[in-house]
Structures are given as structure tokens and as C-alpha cells.
Length: 476
Image 1 (spheres, rainbow, N blue to C red):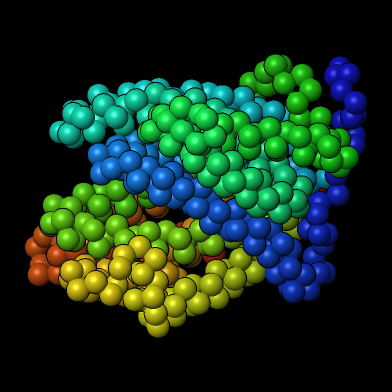
Image 2 (cartoon, rainbow, N blue to C red):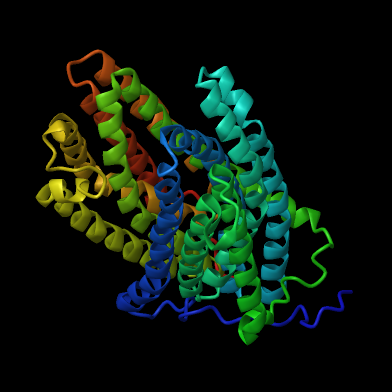
């Protein structure tokens, strides 16, 4: 029998009356927005954190910039997969919260083993990062750039475990309806990373000028600061401290760890499939020429920036649906779906309108649109952005539909659907249209749009049939 300070019979009321079937739809909209807005803001700020590294390193020279670009591509995809793996904690914890009975104990089990999984996943990311230089050499990269990237990764790898662990705690505060904490901690990360880069890269305030290695050290310091901030806030908050997340953390719970693996592995695989598609698109446009690749990179940066909003909504969707599903509220699950899809549709319309109405203004963030030397690049990037405007709805829909299904702990079949949509349709169409029609880079982007469309249709069909497929829990 456990001697933890909370007994197995204690429960936590779900935030926002999640289990009630009589609430008006506007209440669900408010609860979803309360989660989604700070999560989307945190995602956007996180992109700014990554951009800071590029901005500072670019001042060192083109080789250093190329090195950090290569290193980030290796580190980033493995890190995102690990975050997908620990993402299984969100539906498990939300379902326990919605169910009510033994909620403290069940949430504690999930988050503790989520922290264990963050250690294993972080070590795997470290291994990938440390093998980055041989991989770059094997793919024919410049040996000097590959060596620089390898040195950068050898330091950056130490950030992996704290980054993944901090994301487990981010899920915890979000599940507890305190997602705004994630926003403010990301602001802290931005400040720490900016200061660290300024001091360590260029040797300000009497520190040695470490160049690229200084950027990596700043990232490690930032990851530790973020993890420490989450721990401090959780421990200082009376309601969150009740969960006793860090007590007896050394004790394994193999059953719960296995459940996290079972649900999380397909999420990681979906992340790899989607990331791999966009990575492959870069290789395809690169094979079409440097101008095509440059325009692709700029337009994709804007598309990725917009994607952070539906991504934040999808994270909120997982928690909202998980809470309703745990409470056995089919009507609540239905309302959550309506709220999430409506919010995503509204944001997609806004982003598409911006891309159509002011493409030159948006692209001026990354390139000098007034320079005649950039005329060809600008024209091509604007064409790509026009296609991106067209697939905003599908991109957002496939993200939030995956989040909705994830709230029902449904991850394996959605992974198969994602592979079919992204690769069987998306990549195949990108290759055919890019290399076997005059469309070139525009054909690659049309292929991406098709992949997102097919994936959203398949996931939408599964969400629509969720009750017939037995994905929704029955009330006790």
C-alpha cells in the first residue's frame, strides 16, 4: 500500500465542467480557447527561440549558418518524434481527469512514467545527434560544414532530456487548465536564449567568444532554465502540488510505461511521416535548382508560422476530448469537436486571406522585396504562398483531427491514414508534378496540398464514425 499523501479515493474535478452534457456550446468554445490560445502563443514563441539561434549564428558567416541548418535538421526531427512519443500522456491524463475516480493517482502514474519516457526518448535523441556528423559525411555534405555541425550537436545533445521532460510538464499544466504557464515560460526561454547567445557567441560581458559552440551552450542553458521553471511553478502551486509528481519518481510503473509506449509510438511515427514529407519536398525542390529551393524555404517558413495556431488548437483538442471521453460524455466529445473544428476553420480563413491579400508584405519578413535582384525569388515565393493559402484549411484540419482522435487514445489507425495521405498521395503527386510537368516547384507544392487534403479527409471520416467504431467510452 502506497504511503503517498493522497489516497486512491481522492478525485480532481475536471476544469470547466467538462463532464456535463447540458452546457451550451459557447462554454465549450470558451474552454477550448482558454487552452488553445496560450498553447498557440507558446508554439509561436518557441519558433522565435529557434529563430534567435539562426539570427545570431548568421553573423558568424555562411559556413556556420549552413552548419546550424544541417544540425537543426538532424536534431529537430528526432526531437519532434520524441515529443510525439511523450504526447501519449495528454489523452491518458485528460481521460483520468474526466473520469474523476482515482484521478490524482492515475494522473500521477501517467506523468511520472511520462518523465521516465522523457529520459529514454531524450537519450535516443542524444544518440542521433552524436551520430549527426557521420550521417552528413555519408550524404556528401561539405566536410568542413559537417565537422562544425558535429561539434555543435555534441553540445546541443545535452539539451534533449530536459527539453522532452519540460514538455511532459507542459502537458501537465495544460491538463490542469493552466496553459498560460507554458506561454510565460516560453517567454523566459526566449529571454534566456537571446542573452545566452549574445554573451557566449560573441564573448560579451567578459565571457570567451565561443562562436557556434556558444550557441549550443546557450540552448542547453535555456533547456535547463525551462525545466527548472516548470518544476518551481508546479511545486509552488497548491492545486498542482497535490499531485505529488516528483515524489518517489525513481519507482517504475512498467504497465503505465507500456501504455505510454503503445499510444505514443504511432504519434511519433505520424510526426516522422509528416516531417519526412516536408523534408523530402525540400530535397525535391533543391533538385530543381537553387532558386526553387530558396523560394520553397521562405514560403515554408511562413506556412510553418501559421501552422503553429492549429497545432496549438490540436493540443487543446486532445485534452478537451480526453476529459469528456473519460467522463463518458458523448455529447461533450461532440461539442469539443465542433468547437475545435470551427476555431480551426476560422483561423484558416484569416491566414489564407492574409496570404492572398498581402503576400509581398509577409515575404518581406525574410527577403528584401524591393531589391530587383530578388524579383525571380519573390515571384516564385508568391506562387508557392498562393498554394499555401489554398491548403490552410486542410493543413489545419488534419492537425486538429489527429488531435481529436488522440484525445480518444486512437493513434494507430490515424498513423496508417497519415502515411497513405502524406506519402502514397502527397509525395507521389509532388514527384510527378514537380519532375514530369512544367510546374516544377509549384507542382511539388500542389503535391503537398494533395497529401494534406487526403489526410484530412481520411481522419475526418474516422472522427465522424468514432462511435460506430467504438472509440468513445461508454458512461459507467
